[in-house]
Amino acid sequence: MHWLAKLPWVVTSCLFLGPRLGTLTSAVTTSTVFPLHVAGRSLRGPEGQVPWFRGVNVNALVAYNPHFPEAVGIHARDFVEMHALGFNLVRLPLSLSRLEPRPGQFSQAYLTAISQVVGWASANGIWVILDLHQDRYAASLYPGESDGFPSWMVKTFGLKTTPILGNITDPAVQGAFTSFWLDRPVDGHGLQYYYDLALKQLASKFAQNPAVAGYDVMNEPNPGFFPPLSFAGTVLFPFYHRAVAAIRSVSSSQPIFLEPDVVSMMVGYQSWPQRRWLRQGIVFEPHMYTGTYRGLNLSHFLSTLGAHLATPMVRANLTPWNGTLASLTIAYRKAQGLASREDVPWLVGEFGDSPTAGGNAWLKDEIRLQNRYAVGGLLWLWQIRSGSYPWGLVEADGTFGADPERAQIIASPHPLTVGGTAMKSRFQFSNRVYTFQYRALKSQGATAVYLCGLTYPNGFHLTVSPANLHVTQSVQTFKNSELNLPATRLTIPATNGIVQISITPAD
Image 1 (cartoon, helix red, strand yellow):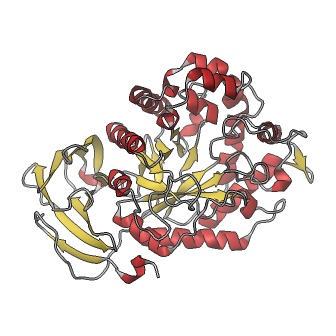
Image 2 (cartoon, one colour):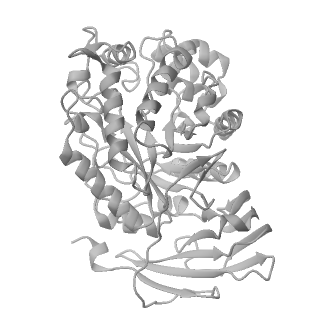
Image 3 (tube, helix red, strand yellow):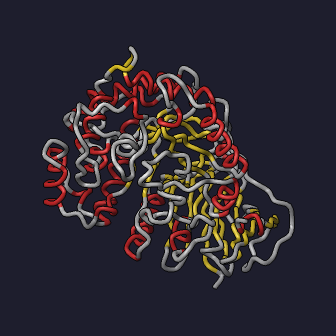
């Protein structure tokens, strides 16, 4: 039996924040989710609430190549633990190979499995992005981390698998993507027709579900053999336009998450075209892996990636690939600038690194930048099977394993919802001081802030300005074999004006 089933939550509510959290006895409570929509550059609830997302990717429903069984099964108890860590958003990668195993035919069993996961998330106050995922196009192409399209959608022009640079430039993968962008026919319809049918099927199933934060149209689209500098404007965005129309035919307001192509992400989103229809419920969703490749020098990158793929764009902007904090900062700044230019919200759909001292330092930098730019982020990955690359936050049994620091970093203090506009969110990992400032607007409701017992094991002190604001707290103590984890939710009432809270450790 999972230790979560043995040792449940204990909950209380009080009005003053004491220096130490003891054993608490009351009934379990959970947060609620509300339907989201895009309003200008924010995602909002029906009363104007602004969620601040902190979350994780869950790949349990992905069908990987059988030689690379990366996925670990997911259970209701996992979402209880996510809630304890302050997560309010999950990105749920899905495999088209499981959803649409035959042309135009959809698996009701798979849709039921998705519904079950969404229900578990909703019960714990967690939204879900349904992500039509792919890695290297299809599980049938390469015996590594590959997944996505069903075999009947794989057309490689006869090219064979020859892995180069982690299979990003594998000829068979590039050929399959090129066939998809060319919309080659199957049973009288183009490949994109069947893809849009799948998106429409998902949206039809979940259009009325408030826990579904929206739909990620495609994970890290690859240009194939199309020229990267023109790919987004001439190929990717026409595809996005049709995909958005398919979703909007059955879901009028749920957010739709669009990613830049994988090459644009490498070089700072320079080929993202200006399309004003993006304002219609669109969220820009880049992935931030700059630091993951800090050991990859430019000459090696260019020689292995191939002149056909990215050389002109890499020359246009080398900085995001030099693996320094400055390069990561530039990547965040460019993403913020693009979202501002297009007047859309944005979200870091994936970030992560290895469980090493350097990897954890990089995760801290990611969190610092997400605070600086007031942007949500989703860690890759919640769990991963033993023997795969060790990026999972928790072990299969839910414990933190040998590296609880990763959980402490990701669960560092952050808002959950903001009743106004965030102005400053800063957490100093060195002394565990957290400062949050926002311009409150009473019509947008209360503000909630999450604090974790991993950060403040001996409690904390709170300072509030204006001093007459009556801040309340609820505490949930999450017990496992490793520790007792008090998770605190501060609630600041709806008001007008500048509000600031400061948190310092009691020890």
